[in-house]
Length: 356
Image 1 (tube, rainbow, N blue to C red):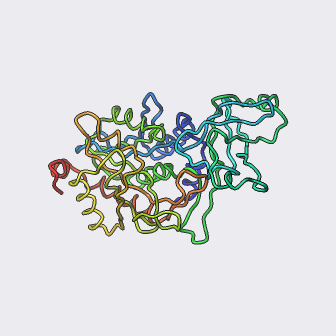
Image 2 (cartoon, rainbow, N blue to C red):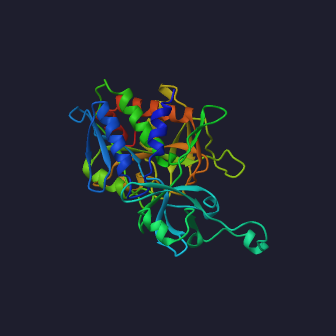
Image 3 (cartoon, rainbow, N blue to C red):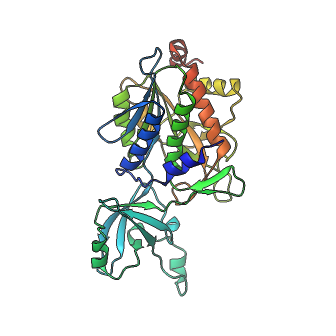
């Protein structure tokens, strides 16, 4: 069973790229409560350390803490706020949605993304999405001075409003920031399940600034210098009328074969498949060369890191309300636990030689 309290707590924190501090502190406390120490790199990634003095290859599991959002760009005389997207958005999905503005003093204010009234719109406007530079936030205030009196300033974070919902089938769960707080949740669960287990050195890297360019993955990899690594992220579910690919909610953890900036090594894929089969862990595949994950920077570090991505299928990625399935998350947790327990020098050598 999923720890819904932990999941909601991790996902509800506001933390777009470069504003991940609160999420990082929360995750550090999760690890510390399990007796796991942490290090931080200079960009702000938080890395949990477990069994780091044990024998075996150094394994890193990475998941990014940042969510997509906006940054305050300007405030006009009437108190409306123009915003700059941080991460990939489709403007069609942001209009009429609630957001949270977080000031430098950590005060939080609700704001609505404004939109034109539908009545009387010319057909040529109806058939277009709004240009991102035309969107704005409405705080429900009279003018610019009122906005400034709240302490809101250019550069402040704007994050999607959190709404956590266990759906009609309770295995389906909706919230903001599943991309990629679900990965952070998975790593906390793995740490808890392996609490009393001795295994290969394990580094749990909660990375920053993935959305604008996989930046924290680079610095965290430099800090850890792993031998083998798994990026945990989300991937597009193709089981709705609007999206079409081979991944579906509820069919297991996704073995991602390719994306826009990484290709999984064949030997590592075969090894992960073997572990799934041995422990009866449901898995599915993604062959989807759009988007990317932390793997894009991890695998290119040093002399090359043996690396692939394990994904959770997600509906409505990069919106205020995504949906995941409990069974996929549990399959990923089980798989990671078995991979950590199974890994040793001989297995690593076999995989490195493209065998499994």
